[in-house]
Length: 348
Image (tube, rainbow, N blue to C red; front, side, top):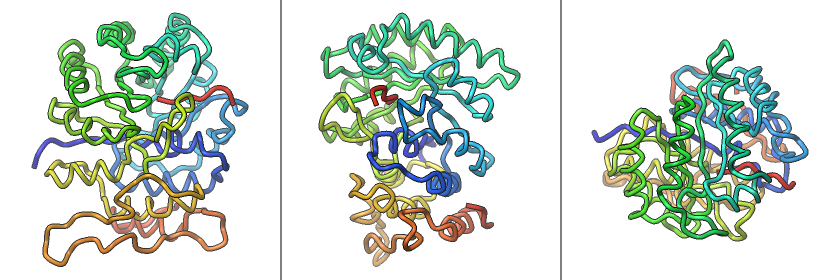
């Protein structure tokens, strides 16, 4: 068996935040409970931002309070400022994720402040998390690290400059984000080599979008360079609000399937994950980008291939709320025992 790959699921935060129709709190909780039993290393549950900024995530505290926390899974949240961090800490998040852009223009458009001001504000968040009795670890996501739709190419030295500044503050992890799908495999290989060599103690994660069809190729080359942590979104949901036509994050189930076919261990129960992915179009009321829910998984054993999409397991007449018995069925199959089931856009 090849290298173990660890996944961070983003669908209920990055995936849902741009959806025009509100996803009910019950649905979010049931989906997260289902995902918790699929073998993820991390699930980014929500964002503690102003409800006026992102109405979809106004229920952040309720969702964090109601989810069932499965041992071995880290439940994380994005926070924009100290107030958001205080709320996240009150909810006992396992990790706080903060974000700023490497591009000055993009940071102004997304966060409405220059990078130096963002860095100062996030320094306060990092200090607060470190001084809290829980000593909650912090991950920093650097957006537009592989290119900016407004500024074009982003020098690798600029990415390294901000990464080293955050590393000096004692953050645990760094996520390098291809926010609008501009990265190519050669660029990814170079970035992975530089960051691992210069910042070997950081938990390094790659965050790709499939805007131009290079998402899985970028994952593949990153794995070949030794990267073992990746963000993904169920069904491939998500996207950048400041890049019209930009598609979402790499699709979790498609990426996991590819790596499993190549012999990598992921710890993910892909069949259980596909049960959840096949219900996602009902939740968001539109087709999702993922391929595997349409074509089925590859199985090289004669006569054992996935025959196709299969049933969508939702409660009839409940506007896309996940069927609690289906979530319990996923839990029983994976762990052997059932369980319960704007202007400002924060994105990577």
